[in-house]
Length: 283
Image (cartoon, rainbow, N blue to C red; front, side):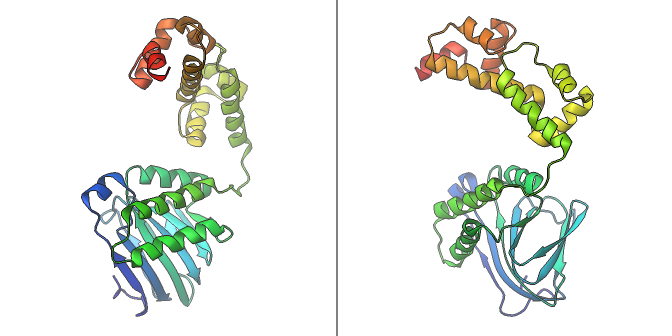
């Protein structure tokens, strides 16, 4: 609230209640703030006060300390802080005078999107060098200043910001283990048709135990190696079903499935239809 300790009188906060369609289908920012604070400012969200929202903060002046997921990081002017507010966190002024903008982000799959970005880039992101990100943040705050902002454009602006953050080139140096897992994923992409490509084989290629390989692949690729391999095979099968006249049996064989029954069962489980039905629908 604007009367909290450390928030100065020239600070502003905006609130917009979403209509039913916006709440059900779009991204939206119910709360947006432009804060000017002194060194006393702090905010903490405990396990009891967590909300099913995400939050972005853009530091414009001064320095802020953020405590989140067992880490403490400093955010300086030009940095963006990204948080999943379902988890406890704390941030506070670590300089005499700070200015920052913030907004909540709500919508289907927002938490998953935000956590994907955090896994890749961390929760404190150097965004000052990206004019597109700066412009997008400014537009989101400008939307909030309007008495009746267009919810469709607001949704586009929020989605665009997350897309831009996700697309930032990672400046971190990847570990040998992460590079090994990436190489394993690329191997799957090019050798998916080989029936010998299975979890023990892939783990052995990466010189890792099967259990450790499974755990690290899931950590770095956000899916299991089996799911990744299956998705690559099904994608190749869909391409052949729609661009060739090869038989279902040949396509299943060419895409690495052990037999036609396994191919049809896997395809139906993934798409809700048989390969033949998929071919007819997209012919």
